[in-house]
Image 1 (cartoon, rainbow, N blue to C red):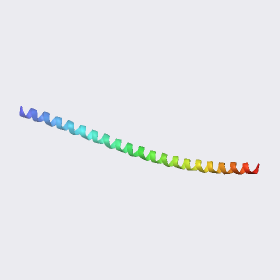
Image 2 (tube, helix red, strand yellow; image 1 turned 180 degrees about the vertical axis):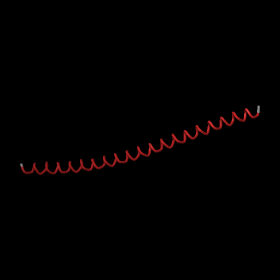
Image 3 (cartoon, helix red, strand yellow; image 1 turned 90 degrees about the vertical axis):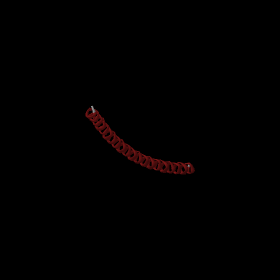
Image 4 (cartoon, rainbow, N blue to C red; image 1 turned 90 degrees about the horizontal axis):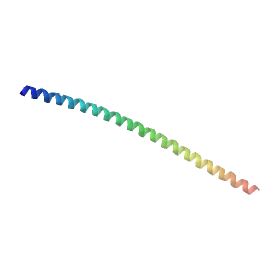
Length: 73
């Protein structure tokens, strides 16, 4: 009886260890995915910032051209 209980407990412990390792691996994969998404997000923010700067520059240049053409009329 004792050896049967011991065997069952060892099986349970082995199953829990495998489940723990699996969860740990899944967690590592998810952390890596979030790191990658964070890097993608940072790159997109940088692109958006650059586009906004270009748009503002273009708007200022357009306003200058528009203002100067009104003065020549």
